[in-house]
Length: 242
Image (tube, rainbow, N blue to C red; front, side, top):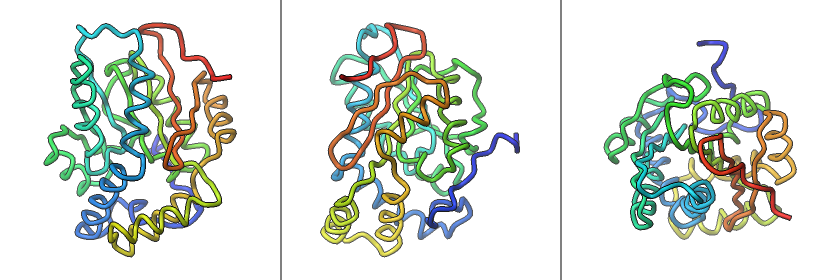
C-alpha cells in the first residue's frame, strides 16, 4: 500500500497537509472550510457536478456516493439532500487520512474510513459515484494523476472532481469573505495557499488527459473548476463543452 500513498505538493504548506496536526486546530479549520463550502461555491460546485453525472440515471436506482478526502463530512449530506429532492436515493460514504476529520464526518452522519485516497480500502467498481472536492490541489502532479485513475477505477456510474481555479482576484475575494465570516488565522493562510495551488482549466484538462480520462471541465462561481465524467455504467461520457 505504501507505494500507492499520495504525496503532498511542495508548493506552500497547509495545516491539513499533516494528518497528525493538532486536533483542536484541525476541527476549527474544517468547520470554517464547511462554511466556506456553503458560502463560496464549494457545495454549489458539487451539486453542479452531480447534476451532470446523474443525467439519464434512473431515479429508481439507489446510489452510493464515496467522498475521498471528505474533511468534516459536510458535502455528502448536502449532496444526498439535493439528490433526494430530485427523486434520487444517494447513500454517502467518506474516506479521510485524518482521524480527527474522520471523527467529524461520522458525527455529521457520514460513515467514514481512515485511509489514504491513493489506496482506498474498497474494491474497483464498488461504489456508484466518486466525489473529490478540494483534495487534488494538496498533491503533486504525479499523485493527482494517480488519484484521477483511482476515481475512474472505483466508480460504476461517474466521477465529480471539483477543485479551486487560480485567478488574479481570487486571493482578495477569499480574504474579504474570510474576514466577513471571521475565519481563524490558520484557515485564512491555508485558503490563500490553496488558491496558489489551484488550477487553470487547461492544467486540469492536461492532468485528466495524462490519467487517460475523457471528462468535461467547467468553470463555476467562486473560482471553482468541476470535472465530470461517466465510467461506463450509463449514458456515454459527457462531452467537452464547445
